[in-house]
Image 1 (spheres, rainbow over the protein chains, first blue to last red):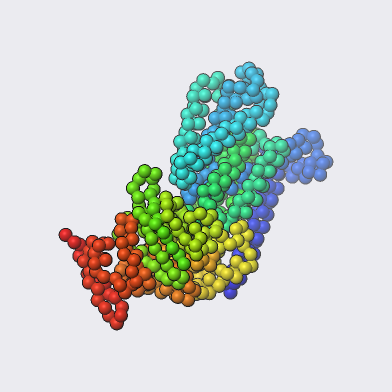
Image 2: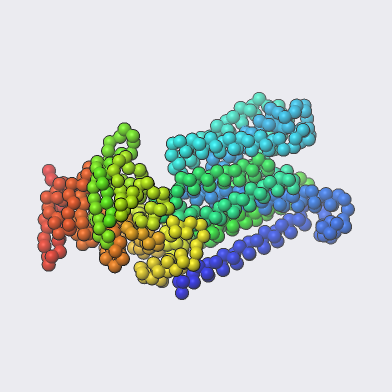
Amino acid sequence: MYENIYKQNRNRNITVITFVVLAVIFLAIVSLFTGSSNMTVKDVTDTLIFKGDAINGRIIWNIRIPRIMAAIVAGAGLSLSGLIMQTVLNNPMASPSTLGVSNAAVFGANLSIIAFAGGFLNVGNNLSNYQTSANPYATSLVAFAFCVFSIFLILGLCRIRAFLPGIVVLAGIAIGSIWTAATTVLQFFATDVGISAAVIWNFGDLGRATYKVDLIMSLVVVIAIIVFSFLSWKYNAVLSGDQVAKSVGINVNRLRFLSMLLASLLTAVCVSFLGIIGFIGIIAPHITKKIFGQDHRITIPVSALTGSLILLLSDTFSRTLGNGSALPVGAITSLLGAPFFLFIIFSKRRDY
Amino acid sequence: MFEIKNLVFRYKKKGNDILKGVNLKLKPGEIGILLGENGAGKTTLFKNILGIEKPVSGEILFDEKEMSKLKEVERAKYIGYVPQNIRYGALSVYDTIMTGRISCFGYRVSENDHKKVCEVIKKMRLEKLAAKNVNELSGGERQKIAIARAMAAEPEMLIFDEPTGNLDIANEQLILKEAKKLAKELNITILTSLHDLNQATFLGDRLFFLKEGKIIYDVKKDEITPDMIKETFNIKVRIIDIDGEKLIIGGENEK
């Protein structure tokens, strides 16, 4: 009977994944019908079959759909990034920002906004100009460049010294705090308009997503899912510690380096485009592990989908609660997620 | 044949030598026990054999093949490892044992891997536990799973680091018997450290007394004398012979 365990497990895994995929699709559809523009269900369906009016068309096609896609993709990316970092660093508190990636993104974006007025062009002290400057992606690009710089700085440092989990985490904290300090200095010298534009950027906002952004993010997320899934068994072995992992034939340092690099890049892409969306990277993987254990063949796809689900839910709330304008989704993820997270942590489900 | 020739190791470039020219030999199916005080270098020796640390000089040979030059994947096919502090992820027993075969399958599990894992489960009579979460098991069962995992890649040798350290007496017996069975029935070479001298004479074929990074005695199990123990551990003992079995009693600190 134990000979069939793996077949039973495979069937169970397929059922679980199908179920979560359906949940994401269901929520995406609900999300499509909700928002602050008072569109009726009929308006939305009309628009979807190209019969609605132009304004509704713009709301659905240019605002809601790219936004929903961004929630699905970024939620998956951030969650996956958190899961992999928790595994390879052997630390349940590891998150997508462990290497100081978010702090580097904030500094990069602030630098771009405050020093270069958002688009490498001086457009004067007018808030609206910050959004319509020369290149709409300039801020994201600068943020991303600083993320990459920060990632390579930490991974490079660790490679010279020792690639031990504790050292990586501490180096990440140290470098992260340097970025935070630098951001504070930068903001000290900023104009009122510059500072408000910078602070608004820091709030994670899915409304910044365009189809182009969605495409870039999905490419990175899909590549990451494929690579991480490929390495599932290695991650499973790493759960027993470095020595055991080495003894069963894994080059642990290389696995850790590669995984940290890819997971950090994944975060870098998401936060550079959308701003800081906290907590998904901790909450989604932990909920998944609490319910399904730690087999990465299931936690990798399910964590990704759980991340999508949580971010999508938070964004739907933020658009409904905002009364005309959407609240920062980053705040909603923590406000709604943290209590649920505490409930999961303290409930007596399977120990992990 | 497993052989260590003149192994020297130190942690820092200019630090003290932890292993100062260790020599030992084990034939296939033989069980070697490393005896020595805490800090004598037992775990360091294991780390060198397992490739976790690189020796400064000397050779670690398995059938004339140099182990320290092999990649992790290839070494894993020769040597399995049962750690002292066992930690598991929340996986099923079946999957945990499967992780021991990574050196064989790499990324995707094949039918053959399932067959081999089932064989190990059967051999170690773990059928009833196979579907359970490893973290729900008792200490002795967890230790057995660690052995099964080390066996999964069908290595020719097993390294045990203090296999009975955290176990109660019944589980201790269980693990020792299991280890003996593996050596005698499957002709697996075993090198293990043990603190209990009576367990050492029960399990071992050869005893290696390690003191300050050197093997000071290398004897068959029935050649053990109180003097060897005194020199290694600085304690006085008596050895009583009961029907050919050695019983080691006493243990007073030398003043």
